[in-house]
Image 1: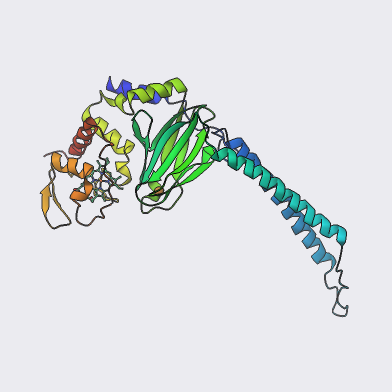
Image 2: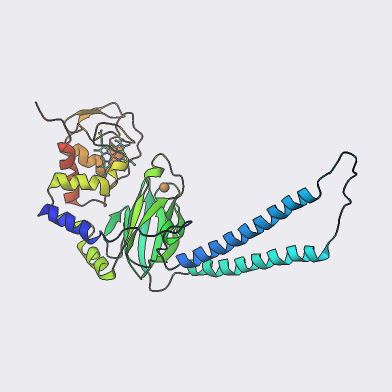
Length: 335
Ligand SMILES: [Cu+2]
């Protein structure tokens, strides 16, 4: 039963695979992507052609006017050619003007949010993405959106500067503390796209990864109604807990095999005595784990930096139980 539920979920999302990318650029996943790309190709082609003209002409002239022998004097200088000068002033000016007008139009399109856009709040924090949807559902590191609908993102950070970057959509926007930024996109079709943080934000920066999943609108509505993780309601607690360590990004900082990462490993954690930074010790039980997750600053483990974000409001009661149940299973068999 349980297996079937998760497998079904993955099954229905299986068609959401990344597809074709071109030689230079990833797949065009948004309605703005073709505009951005054609401008890119225009600038690239113009620059490549001018580069070739300059380099080839230069090589030819170097060869043509080389010093031929010790005795020969200097080549008589040529100092003026009105036609040539006009040519290399006018052509680049035209190219620059085209680029400006084209770029400005595209820029406006990318910055003026359509009025009927669905607003999603994006919060960056070390080192995860939190998405809050209009009906109160939230998701971590996975932005779930409907296809063919404009989506407005309202972005802010809880700590340092991050940057929300989805190459497939051709959007990148700084995510700042104490200030809201806005960007928008309309996904061109169903699919799965990479999400990166594009602003170096500390040790976990390279692991601040996410996905954007674009669903068909009905499917998206269904997902919203069910709430992000309701599908897991029938899963046994330890199994759900294991899934959550990935879904909620615990595994960017904790391992379950004994090796320390940004935080202590979950392996053999339960039942062991932990030394805290204030010198006291505690035996790890359910309440300690619960408090570590909801209020990490209240008990910081000795030897670690207090960088764990609080998960208050981000985990349902059952999800907390599941994480605790999972951590409990991580120990060697009793002899
Ligand atoms: Cu970041």
